[in-house]
Length: 184
Image (tube, rainbow, N blue to C red; front, side, top):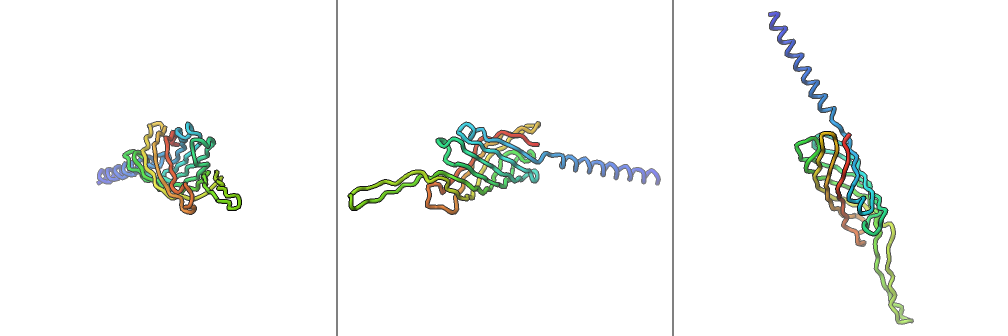
């Protein structure tokens, strides 16, 4: 009888110990990522991405872009919070889809002309309308690869639609790039 009780206590302690180890493994996972878009650096903008991992399949984050070269990129800046769902085998990696909102600013080119009847002349009035700010909703997809040491390579591509100023050229807006970063 004493042997039976001793065996039960040992099994319970092993069970409790293994449960603690499994819980420690889950909570020791890194939950934050910081990335920079290497493609936009080449094109003339800085895009930083911060992501917080909610669990092994989902995350929330925010992208912030500032363009310093107007020739290659039409967007001046954007701030884009997102929710992401992962479908990979590793913790928060592999193929993903995301939904995002984007507060963006563009330099929109406007066309206009009018006719001056007394002088019988047509005048053109066109140029850039600076800082047209709008809000877009969109979807994105991509792939994230992560090493054992936490280094990240991510390729993503998305499209959104501006909601409020539909008379402009920029009703459709893009998002994407090649991101390099670290999970901590």
